[in-house]
Image 1 (cartoon, one colour):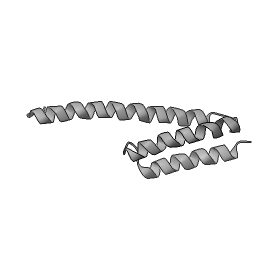
Image 2 (cartoon, one colour):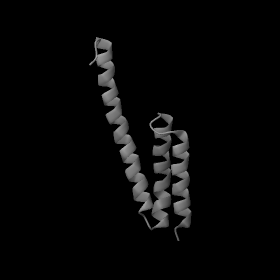
Image 3 (tube, one colour):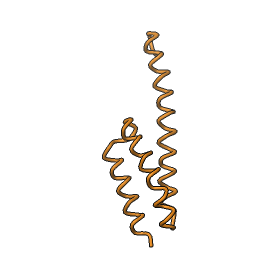
Image 4 (cartoon, helix red, strand yellow):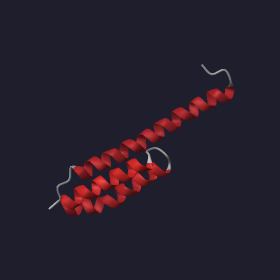
Length: 84
C-alpha cells in the first residue's frame, strides 16, 4: 500500500485515467467492428472518417501506439475498397 498522501492520490488518478482510457478504447473498437461487419460500401465510407478521427485521438493521447493506429486505419481502408 501507499505510504504517502501523494502516492495515494496517484493511485486514485491512475484508476480514473485507466477507466477513462478503457471506455474510449472500447468505444473505438466497437466502431471498427461495426464497419467491418457492414456489407454496404456507402455506409462504410460515411462512417470511416468518424472512426479514423477516433483512432487518431487514441494515438494522440497515447492510449494506443501510432503504428497500431496506422495499421487499423489501413485495414479499414482495405476492407472498404474490397466491398462491391
